[in-house]
Amino acid sequence: MNTNNYLNNLSVLAFAFVAIVVIVNLFTTNNYGRSNREVVELVTSADPILTYHQLSAIARGHTGDYLLVDLRDELSFQEGHLPGAINIPFANILESSSLRTLKRGNQIPVLYGNQESMAHTARVLLLSKGFEENIKVLGGNFETAMKHAIEDFRPSFANYREEKARFDFVRFMGGVAPPAQRQQPAGVIPAMRQETIGVQGGC
Image 1: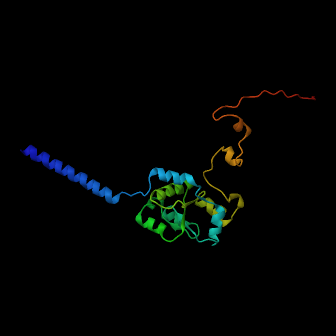
Image 2: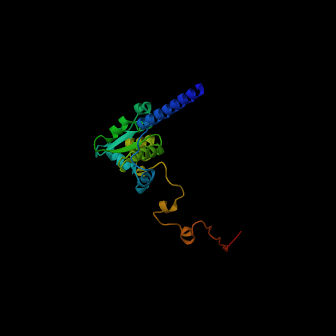
Image 3: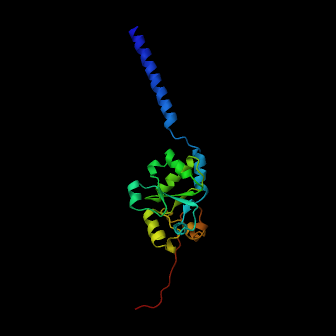
């Protein structure tokens, strides 16, 4: 009898524990507004980069349509930030107060941080929460933006971004592939040519 009572009590405790875990999850887990597939489609549908040329215009007060959001920690933000920016540390981006701040008004959030990848990650998280796809990411990072867009705008950095594709000839050559790429199917090494070069003159 004692064994049965012990097992009954144990099963009741186990059930109660599971019920508590489920209830806690219901109230603490972030509810996402989009599926992973929808988020991927939004991420790949358009380039979200805000250029340094656009940032320079924003800093001069030529447009009030954007809200600059600094994703760095509070101490870094206090030491320096882009003009007019607000601070929402990356770790707090999905908190209710942060989401309310970003939804306030009709301004388009422009995310930036210590690396461009940090801002892209924050954008993906916000898209998954149901934010509009027009959320922007500032190319590069805080230091490069201050140096090349705010302190001294340089046209050569107008479209700067930190994560450029490497060796992407089609992109760098304006959509024109090199001859070797046009003549050979993908994954095939071009055939080598042997040339004889005649040399005239000498010592």
